[in-house]
Length: 585
Image (cartoon, rainbow, N blue to C red; front, side, top):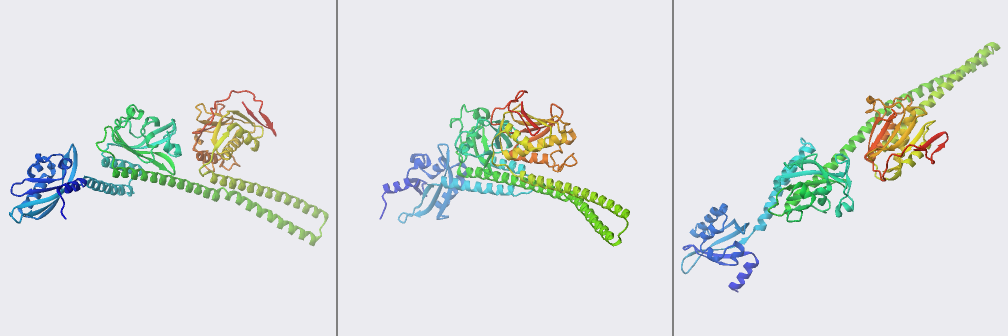
C-alpha cells in the first residue's frame, strides 16, 4: 500500500511535521507539509537548504546545522539527527530534524531525505526539569547546612528563588491582627473565610525577610493587608500567579498603586494549621511568559519548607520552655520543699524524744515512790514537756501547710504552662466580684471601673485575678484598695492597688517562679499570672499606680465590647460580703 501526497500532507499536518528532500548537486529543497505554520516562511523563500539556514535557523545553531547537512550530502555519513532553534513571530521554537542519505539508483545522484518536527514543548519540559533539579540541589544544600541560621537560610532561598524565577524581589511576610504584627507567637487561624473570602480589614502585612531593592519590600516594612497583593494570595487555594498585573485588571488596585508590581507569584505559609503569612516573588515589570509548572513547584516547595521550619522552631521553643520549667520545678522541689521538710523532721524527732522522756519519768515514779515534793517537781517537768511537744507539733503543722501550698502552686504552674485553646466572652466585672468572695481580703476594698467583656478562659482568668487580689492584700495591707479598669487605648485592662508598690529594681524579677518578699509566700503567684497571660497570647507588665502602689497592665487582650473607664461614684449593685467589700465605681 502507498500513501498519496494528500494523505501524507494530512499526516504531517496532524503531527506538526514537514517532510523534505535535498538534491546534493543543486542544493534544491522540496517539501511536504505546512511549511509556513512550522517555520514561518513559504516555500518560495527557501529554494535551497542554504537559504533555509540563512532565513530560518537561529544564528547560534547555524554552524552545527550546516555541518550536519554537508556531511550527509557529501557521503561522509549516511544519517544524522540535529536539534536547532528557529524564531517564528518573535517566539523561539525548537526543531528536531532526522536526515538520511538516499542515492538514486538510476541516475546515481545523491539526495538527503528527512523529517522536521516541532519539539518545543519537549525541550521546554526538559529545561524545566533541569532547572527544577538544580533548584532541588540548591534547596537541599541550603536547608541541610547546620552552619546557617533560619534567617540566613531564608535569605539564601529567596535569592535562589529570584534567580530561578527571573524575578528581582523575594520576600517572606507576616500577616496578623493590627497592632501585633511583629509578635513572634501570633498567628491568624485559617478558617474557611481566609481561603475563600475576603480577609478582615484590620490585618497587617509585615515584611519579615526580603531579597532585592524595592523600598516597600524591606524587613520591618508594614502596611494594611487591604493594600497588599498578599490579600489575594491568602484567598487563593493554591498559588497566586500574575504574569501581567496591568493586563489582569490590577490598575487602580491599592496594592498596585502602593507597590507597582507588574508580575507576582506567591503562596501561603501555614504553621500548625494557622496562617503565618506568605512567601512571594515579584517584579515591577510584566513577565514575557506565564509561570510554568516547574516554577510553581519551586514556590510550593519554598512555602512548604518555610512552614515546616517555622513549625519546628515553634516546637523547639515550646520544648525548651517546658524543659526550663521542669528545671525550675526540680530546683524548687530540691530546695524550697526540703527546708520545711527538714523542719518537720527535726521537730518530729524532738517530739519523739519528749515522749521517751515521759516514759522514763513514769517508770521512775513507779519505782521510787518519792515524797510529794519530788512528785510536784516531776509534774512541773511533765507540763513543760507537754508545752514543748505542742510547740513542735505546731511547727510541724506549719511546715506541712507550707509544703501543701508549694505543691499546689507547682501543679498550677505546670498546668498554666500549656496553651489555652478554648476561650469565650467573660464579663470582667462579674469575674472580679466572684473572685473577691473566694479570696481572704480582710478589710480590703475592690473598686471596679470597667464593664468590659474579654475573650478569655474564665477559669484561668479567675486564677489571675485571685492571685493579684491575694498579692495586693499580702503586700499592701489588710485595708488596701484594689482597682480594676480598662486601659485608655482599649488594648486591655489593669489591676492596681494603693499599697507600697514594687521597686523598679524588682519589677523584672517579680514574675520569676519562687521569688517572694514575704516570709510565708510561695513566690509562685505572679509566675502563675505570667504563664496564664502568655497562654492567652496577652502581655503583662508591672508599673506604678496613680496612688503609688503596684499596677499590673494586661495588653493584647481582645475586648469584645466597647469598654471605657467608668466614672467614680457609688454603685447600687455593690455589696458587703462577710466583712469584705466589692464596689463598682
